[in-house]
Length: 475
Image (tube, one colour):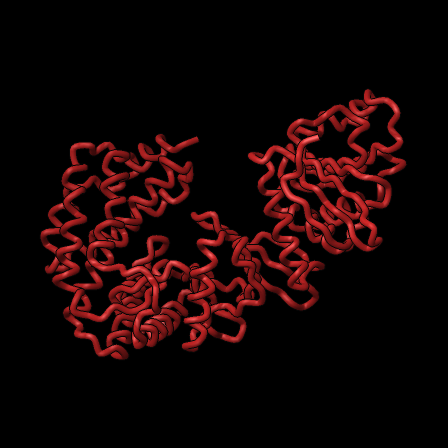
């Protein structure tokens, strides 16, 4: 038998925690072979996983020892089989289990009674001398079942943190590999951040830096930096984007509060050890536009002109921005990453990539958001409050704001194109027309006339061009 990808050891609560952690990862065609002697915990695992998939911790999940197969209506359907009493492997076909393997989630106890399922995940459970402890070996194709290994790591982590009995629900994912799950234990909830060491280490540092200065970054309840896992305060689901969607009149007061918070952030020296997002770095990052967009849009003849954007961004930053002391910027700062907490705080998310840059950068991110348009009055009020509280020169600030808006949104156009062409994620293309409108508006500032001349040579993302880019989307 193949070597285990991972082995975890713990009590019955860890077995159930592993099942609940694995449940959101499964889909049609996934088969879990539960191997081990009587009393090793096979049915306990299956019962916890089925209840998690059904979203009902009290669902009656009888053992199919005598019926052989028990099915559950879900999306996809779930088949739970116990083949202990099976004497002839041909009976597997009669049960319909073979056909179900392609379209259902299958949990199969005593799998040695049937033909090998080569693509399945095998969990080998065994008892230990301590009757309260058991061992689970995770066995399968690592290219297919790395998600099971990760689920086992999450389960061991939450068990160590005292949340083994918590229900698990997928909460969010983004364009990166980072994901979030909500854990619910009685009346308590927490968010489980599933990232990697390279992401979690700066996240923890920035969390501490922000909280020490009174900003509402989530409290860290537990962390495993080596494995990139953290249990953090759950701010709830009231993203600013959602709040404003439900109540458009709340946009101006909320964005004014955001501007006030950013003004306070700008009152501190930049956090130590973060990347300097200065002219050269802004130029490097905006290079994504020239690298991906013109060619994908069918404008190969404009790639050389597009390459001229980066050095011009660097020169303009030196002229318009370099006289202002850099401050901490959360960088990816927009209405999906700000939560209005139940006690009316502005909860901050996604700040592990913080940079030291011009004070306008986060305000640009919030107000010139590629995902949504804001009424002009909302933008004007937020900028006015920011200038009032920071004391920055309005004329120079507006020029810097325009430059950073052009740079940021050109870079985002490159990212959206790359996400489609290279990564097979076309859903971001729908934001291109609005993003381009933001670029055209910002580049009209008189201080950016040379940059405007280049941008005007680029093909705008019309419906035809967006479809052209979509046609190149990686399968």
